[in-house]
Image (cartoon, rainbow, N blue to C red; front, top):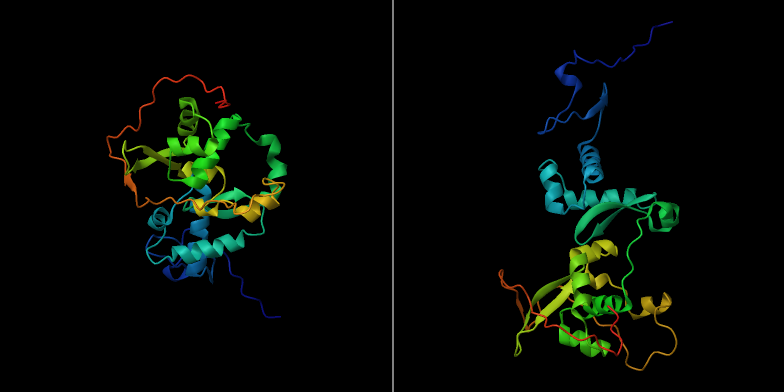
Length: 253
């Protein structure tokens, strides 16, 4: 019987031909004679970078941590497909990428979820108006809601980081316009404001029930400056609220 040749892993005395390295000194071999394709190594590096990140990363930040020849958009697409059917998915949120628990497994983690303080009805209505009607001014919010908005309502949303002052309307008085933030998108699992549910989705979810008036539609929000909107100056602190008497008509902020 002819003895078979056994390939043993070497530790300290590897010959130069046993390994392949890229410009970053990454060894692309697991076992002697078995080299990892460069594209697969880039995919593994991307997976490690995203897994270790404390917050979602944009493509430019990811590219800085990968070899120069790595095709980041293609790698992200491939990795998202790899994780599509797993318990953890790779998703894009507010233009950045992160691993998140698969939506259908949310019930498994309910015991570990941090209980958030519930917003008042006034704050929820105001947030919805800002989200769908942005850019929107305080006066426009009041017109849509039909009641005066108290200072505390917007303060809560601003402190949460879900709403921001965007700019100033080009009308007399130069009122401040409001819109949503990246934190809002991250919290609600959206990539951009245009991903907000439309009329059919809201109806299917049971949010809009009963007969809907003819001509009723869901506004299309925009996160870019409007034609009649100027950006805030770097030193602009926004509008000044005067002390108000609570509106008896129902703003319960």
